[in-house]
Length: 454
Image (cartoon, rainbow, N blue to C red; front, side):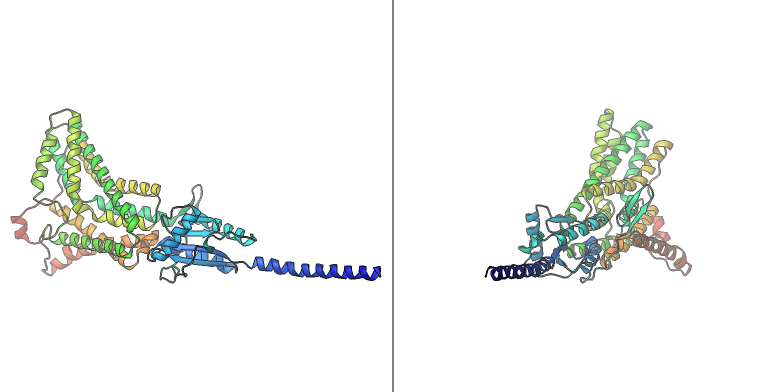
């Protein structure tokens, strides 16, 4: 009896063990089959979002338990609210896109080093029997199109590694290249060059190199500060509203208008609408400049009056200098650069911008001789700036991402240079051979009767 009872107990225990052993893999399989969500917040037109999206798609295709949940936040208010909910839950400020979230980890922006971090976070979540999913209770809105579906080309990461230097992101280098070129062309501004050359010419009458140095350096320093503040203000504004497509279109149209007006000035200088210093302002400017250079007070007083003159001139010049700063600020804001990156790029812009004015100033200070910017110089400068503005406007309207690669950026500026040379050669060399004279400069009687200075 006891033997039979013992056998029954053993059989029962064996059955329970087999059942438990059979259930455990099922439980493990059920746990392992849990999906890990990758939450991806992006903007339609954001180049770094378009760069990250194929990387995330590759991760999902390699891990069948990973799921990509995408939200476009620039044009979808519901999705923006979801991003705000995520940011509140994880305690971060969603200041830029893309934003990538896995579990309780998040990444703002996209850089090469983020790839390994995101991959590691995904693998950790996949191996966790109870992975954290902040979005489980928050992500209630339907998925939206990914950048590729929105027609944004997926750009490959342009990273190169150089000995002793390390990794270089060519995307960021294209910003430095574009900054240098735009700043260089902006520096050849007939308005600022005219004011500086006239001011230095008037200062020469004092015969004092010390006075020339004080007036010139003060003028350049103050105008640089004012111009930098203006550009910073434009950049700050575009950083908040530049993601709106109509703002991008408005900036492109503004560049188009500035470019066309500058090209018009090459043919018909200061006739009709013109972004130059108005003739009505010049008598007062002459008066202010004369009073500055004839200041008989102390050197400190001379510096103060030069600074005041520079501030006033800067405001007058805004009408003919605003084009390139807005274009450049829009380009930088669209690339989601950080504060320090912006400061470095702005420093590069202003350094390149000042090169030509420093050359003019140095020449006067060394030789004690000055020459003014004449109308013929102003026309050529207008042609160069107008062609570049028109080219950049077309790029912004057709495909802004051309400015995100150093190769494509180089082609854009090369196209602007070729357009400038082509217009000049056709206008000055080819058409006159057929007796076709376009513009006020090629009319001899007008040149004799109305000699102008820029």
